[in-house]
Image (cartoon, one colour):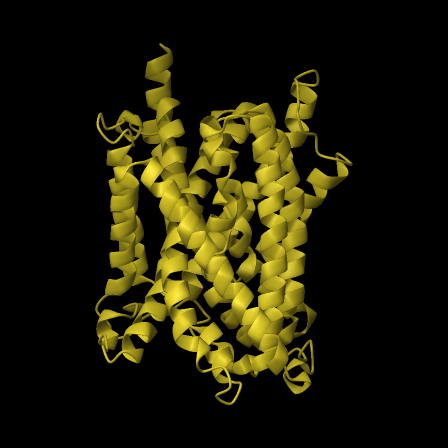
Length: 448
């Protein structure tokens, strides 16, 4: 349930429309399948490593054990980016649906208080939009942060309820929308390339896979709570693969219905599901308010699980002296890492209020792809270093599957634009400066 809750976020409710309209067309369904295959290789690697090293650091713990503190820091820093920006992305999508829901009942939130003040051109130039701050996006992050501070029992109950609502909305849209799919909207299935890489054609399909890839990253959130699982050797592997399978079926079905109900070019909006429903000539207008309510409630679960995974990764990194020890301090009453939760929540709220969803989505994809490639590498390294260690689950067809995971993750990274690589480079440069100036000396002092 945790993996499904974290995975089904704005990837299906927001990024699907943007990727279809700008890159893949109706073949966004193929993009989802390609991304799922890449994730399957990584998920199998996660399954083996989670059983071998059942710690709450996920990919960070695996890289630390296989390749040492420097590579461990790199992966941990990528995971900080992944979870932080993923939560911000979902919050921006939540804001769009919330604003639309409020408008449907006569409450209009001013655009300058519900949009990002910054935007970026295809060449990477930063522009201002005239907006002040995306207040709803920041507000929902703040509310979820408070829920996390209160404790894991309350968090789990809320997460289960929100996941049920979210999956129910997807199934309802698919069940009703399938009767209004028009063949004309699905033709041509793969639009002709417009002369540049990633602008439709097969290159657009792969570019679409890279953009929507982050829609699958929630499966690794299962491994970050390994220390709280009664039987991690069994539960984590099954949870990862199960969450991936369920989410892939839901994604492909939803994308097919969305691009079949409306022209894919009209889906380049922050609320493509409601736009797709509106493309049925009024037949499914009755469903739009229900979808808005369901998405507003359901997207909060992805934010919740993302922030939860982020604080647990920082908790483990603090135990390893990678980050300040206060990230590992537990509140005596709530039994949660309150200080780390508040810091992470504040940073996430700031990013959600300032940046547009397309920039956030591509940045989280490239960061997670890099971390996942290193996870696949870690399986090969630990097979050599710890050949006799007990593994409740082993990656089949090794080394083929881990190598395929590394190669495919790298290819999808290369499909992303240069300005996304530049932002990743800036983030990693800042991270390495922190490592050599702060984290590494702290670990040395602790070992002395």
